[in-house]
Amino acid sequence: MKRPASTPVQPANLDEIDRALLAALAEDGRASVSELARQVGLSAPSTSERLRRLETQGVIGGYTVQIDPRALGYTLQAIVRVKPLPGQLHLVEEVIRRIPEFVECDKVTGDDCFIARLYLHSIGQLDEILAKVTERAETSTAIVKSTPVARRLPPLE
Amino acid sequence: MKRPASTPVQPANLDEIDRALLAALAEDGRASVSELARQVGLSAPSTSERLRRLETQGVIGGYTVQIDPRALGYTLQAIVRVKPLPGQLHLVEEVIRRIPEFVECDKVTGDDCFIARLYLHSIGQLDEILAKVTERAETSTAIVKSTPVARRLPPLE
DNA sequence: AATGAAAGCTCTTAGAC
DNA sequence: GTCTAAGAGCTTTCATT
Image 1: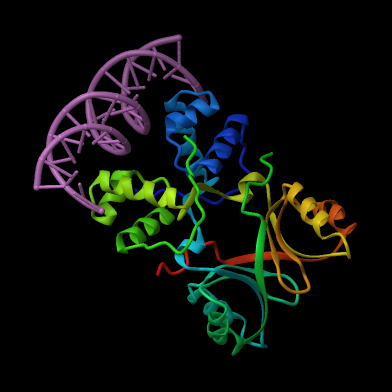
Image 2: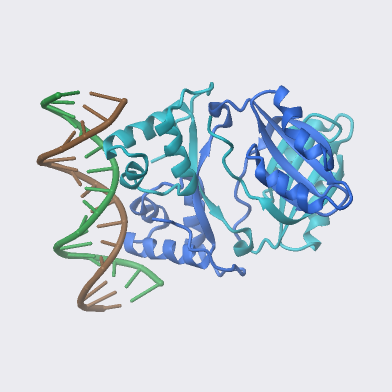
């Protein structure tokens, strides 16, 4: 069963129960429907139907597992700002997309065109991986020392 | 049922089946055990036991839902680099932590101490929210135009 | 829209290899 | 470490309000 049934998303009308559902799923994305039902105060069938609605509306894009990068041997994380050389913008984007150690990349306004997150096994890997980027862009790398705020939900209003 | 049973994580020994399990869960974090079992080629009980092992080892930190920020009315995302004024480092971290629109924040090496992701309802909200930070830090804001790489798994090796 | 009851399926436990 | 079998529990469907 392939989960997300995405649809173009405009600001959805969420009531209090929808928000409670989303908050509960943010805490435990694998909670059973019956447990979610308990938490939001509805019956299981109603909860199931709301879930499906949120999925088909595109409010819920999918569900995923949070994996500790250290368990996979990634002892380092870096955040790399990337400023493509003239005419290299699209190629740089493609290069980043193709390097799987880049686990996230945003295109942003301003001097640095891309801000990307890189997982590394060791500091020695940094040059090796960035070599493919520095042919076509200036980069500026910051090593992550800690993560004061791990991905969390914004206010649901 | 509270899911994650975290444990200090050292590089775990994952075999091919573990990696297949993690990959399947990354695609659909709500896939049933029996479906996961089909995908990795084991029986449901074995799959269930491996899942539990990955959870208690801390390889799996939890499960979560991916919510489209636009559905919540967040039409804008910004990435803010934050350089605290002398003596304000800890307070700045605390301020960021307390503003729920900051959905992610890393402390990094280099001139800019923090790199944070901000969800916004409108561009007008930017100054309003950053006001609490700029009392104690220099900030540099980039608006997200697109996301060439959305959070994905790195190579599982 | 939500509920309750029943059918069908899934998960887990137990015991064996 | 994995399997099969069976009971417990869950999810869904459908008729009802």
